[in-house]
Structure formats: structure tokens, C-alpha cells
Image (tube, rainbow, N blue to C red; front, top):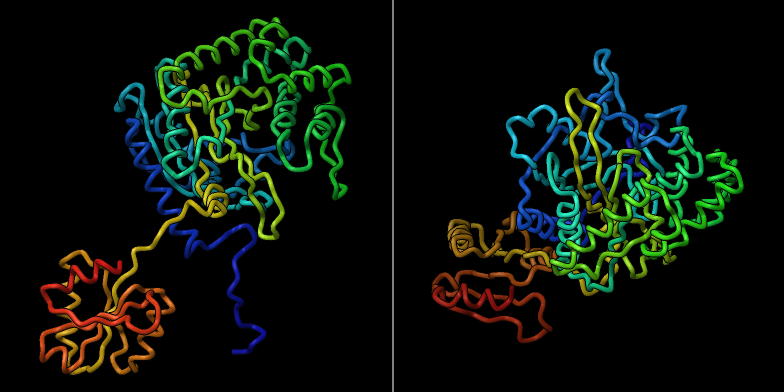
Length: 463
């Protein structure tokens, strides 16, 4: 084949392979997450990775002229279908189809991959894993939302984080909706731009100044790109900026005398009251700037932020964003009466990216014992050893090239950082013994010969 036409082994931008320490940690965290979801009473669900585009909708879009810009969409024989951008839309569709056969409320958890056509970087990818829990149907909001806060705390602490490592920030969409009512911001598109502007407060390069620019006419970023703003007046923008600086719920209660705002504040007060009945009330804080950019949320909203330094591959400290977020929503898109939902989603890949930098949190691979093949004529006996180890729940493998020198076999074991190798030749088989080589110990006296009766116990000392 012409070398110029040979394929290059590369990934498309925004996607990643996961292996080694990152994959080990991811699997460990996924186990902790799933166990916690089950502990809190949630049932598993899997939905299709593709949905009709009309069902997915365009709540992810920031570009009104191209509402499906952030979604991978395909023409399937004249019908638009899309890869899911989150697990919520498929769950809502499933519930709408099957609610008569489901308990009320229905509590489900789901772990799966989602896809977004967005700019990658700093722990952000075009394909990543999400771990969701949702409660849908009829339920007491303050109890349900308190349980969701509790499940975040419980899960993060079981991962090995300290209470000082993360904070669960909560707010309520009704608070800012009431403020917009007072400011006579009534156009739906303008209101959505206001919410998206507020949501960028903590994003790199924004801050108060960037949000203020997005609330007004436009914002020009460092690259020269222009983003059209909400086109608010100076007075309207100033009132919203003033609101964002308030971090005390009692102060906010006195500051905005609007019925919708007061309703949102009351719901938060009730939430904090229920949280006192649990173990994790001190992890949950009110933050007026937490607003969530997606337009599906109607009330309570939550973002979980890490409080330790996270760096990019160049060593620069970055803000990785929320590692667990969500909120309360009302589903009205399908036929029938509206139904209430509330849920949170853990971004597992972003969390792995961050926790790999916490040296005290690690996952160890349970590596196998290697059975070296000294002489091919004894191959049957080597497999007898292999079967004996596996019957005793010892992870083990046999070297797969029987004609390789012992040094090559041990080199393979060392490259994989295996703990121990079993070396048996004519003398061992004659005496019914086994030579164990400690591959992780210091050079010198790192071999021992044992009988079959002691083999399992001796191996367990190394693994």
C-alpha cells in the first residue's frame, strides 16, 4: 500500500480513549455511584442512545438560528434522529410511554454515554458518561430535592472526598423569574438569554463583567468573537448584577418583594428545613448565581463544585465546572397532564479528570499471577495449576508463547507490573512443589519454593 494512503491511527477531536489509572478510577467511582443510587431506593433503567430529534428538542441550543447546533443529528430515511445529549430526554419519553405501568413516584437511575457537538477542553468532551437519578410523578418537592442533595453528599464522600473538598450550591429558578417580572423582561428569547448569561458567571473569562456584557448588547471575547447579548437596559442589567452579589437568603427575601421570587425563597427555606433531618445539611449552600443554562428547569436547581485546585495538562489551574448538577422540571411536551420531575446528573468523566489529581484517591488493579511455561511438554500440568488458582479465586494467567525464554516471560510480567510469577520445571514437578518469584520485591532473596498445600496462602501474601 502507498504510504501516503495509509490510515493514521488518531481520534477525532473531542473524543478520548480511557485506560490505565483513569479507567481503573472510573470503574471504581461507577461502582460507588451505582451502589449509592441503589441504597437510596432508585431502580435501574436503560434507554436508547438515539431518539427522534423532535423528542430531544433544542433546549441545549444557544444559537436561535441553529437550534440543533450542539446535537449530533442524522437523516434516517427521511426522519431526523439524534444521538442523546443527556439521559433526561430519553427518560422523560420512556416515562410518558409507560407511566401507567410504573410506580408513582417513579425513582430511576441510569448510567450511560451522551454526545454533544461542543468545543472540547479542560475535562470537557464531545462524548462523556453521565450518571443520573430522577424522581418523576407525584411527590413532595422539598423531600425529593433534599434526598437528591443527600445522595450527592453520600456519593462524593464515599468516593474519598472530604467535606471540605466540595460544596452543593442550590437556588430556585422562581427567584430570578420574579426579578425578571419586576424588570419587565417578558420576551421568552430575551429571558432565556438572561438565564444563559447568568449561568456563565463562573465560567473562565467571564465573571461579573462578562455577564454584564451578555446582559446588554454584546460581548467580544479574547479571540474577537462576538456574542449577541440580551439587550437589556443599563438599569435592568444593573439590577440583575446586584442580585447576583447577594448570597444570603434572608437578605434576598427583604430585597425582592415579588410573589414568584418569594415562592422560590420559601421553597428553598423548606428544603433547608428537611435537610436538617439528614446528615449532610452543612454541605448545601444557597447561591443566587446558580441558575443552570438549560431552559427545562422550573424551580429548585443544584450545582456541585469542587473546592480543590484542578490543573490542565500544562499545569495551569482551571475551573472544571460543576461535577454534579440538575434541578426540578415540569414535563408538558407530551399529550396528557403535565408531570413533575426532579433529578441530578454526575459527570463521571469530568469527575475522573479532577480526582486523578487527588493523590489520596486511587484505584488499584487486581492483577493476575503469571504461570511461566518452562517446558512445552509440561503444558497440561501448567493448565492444572491455572485451573487450581482460578478455583481458589486467584486471578491468574498462563504465558501464551510456550517457546519464549524465561527472561522474556518475566519481562512481560514486569511490564505489566504483575505481583508474582510461578516457575515450575522438571525438578518442581518431580517434587510436587512450586517456585514463586516476587516480582515487586527488591532484588536478591525474592524467590521461595512451597508445596501445593501452602501455595494459595503464599500467593495471597503477594497480591
